[in-house]
Length: 129
Length: 378
Image (cartoon, rainbow over all chains, first blue to last red):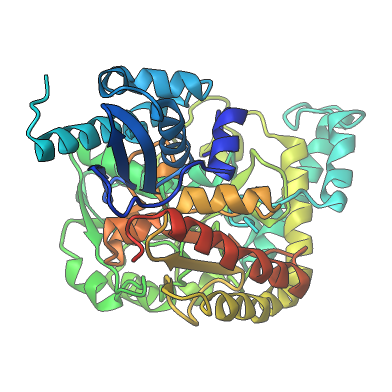
């Protein structure tokens, strides 16, 4: 279970940053599957090609909640191009690692962020590169 | 509150074991005095284990665990009776020690029927009867489920098995020492027990093998345990197991009282909005409470409870090494996301109403906090 969760994971899990919805979000990324036990919604607010605000709502285990929290911190203030470069590995690394079993199932936050940016670009008519 | 996972070894048990690690280190096969001492201690323990389940001393085979007992019973009967038939009947909510052993036998040419259970987690004896064929050589149904605590109608199934003269095994790892277990009343020919679930040591279990029931040994060697389970006996473990059984017998009435505490725990938790009980309201182990909460996931509940000093477990996939939710919760008809939201609290001897009240004081906030984060909660 919590075997192998780093202190940083537990800290983000206990005090998740940027929880909630953005009512007038510019993009929303919905990833995961409740059947697997993980569901992540990432909301973004974009201004001048930068992520002005990032929030999340997550159903899932400790790793799912901690990675969601971490991605909001990593992404805030970044340009969309920079944000798209944030990988699953970057999120895990920022949390001082994740247990191997969690790397695939619960490390969805980067996917969620990318999906939100894609949603924003589709809404605004800009093509994803 | 995770007593179904394991229990703390009773100090009286540890005390009984200690001499067998030091001055009484003998091998029971040796003929000199410390060997005889070990033999005597093993036989006294065998009697105590037998007494707890109203069996005869000669019908107890010591093993290394509940899992090993299950393996010995199931594979032992299967391989002994291969010429008679190849069909085994079990349920879909068995412990992995039974389920995976059955799967293994399927790969080796046996046929297995996995009976469904009701939405409350109970096997229907009529289903057992209907599943029996000319080829059926074994019925194995657990006494009580380790996750949702449901107690199965073993007596009724026992009658059917006896009528048809089919060996009947039950995994009683969760019930022995918690509710009365009487091998004759249950009508079983084999029954598995584990020491560490009843305040005994880890690494020792037993298989009750009714006189006249024969199994193929799974460990071959020096012919220990009536040539059924070769291995130098774990003397300290066996002594501890015997002591634990003796204490369990004395304390059985106390265990029954746990049901009052359990009902208080369940009732209090069900006050939380969108929470439900898994399993049967009354036909359940006295210490078992298993509930589910909509919109949230079990591991995150457990981590939060752990931070508040409460040990619990869940049927969520996220808490185990597999990626699938509990087969038991799926078998009672829950959707995967419901199974992920389950929480098991199992009470033991040390728990009090104060502990239960403490859960009431922390759990609602945990559930609320996680629902605030969840996209499923509206």
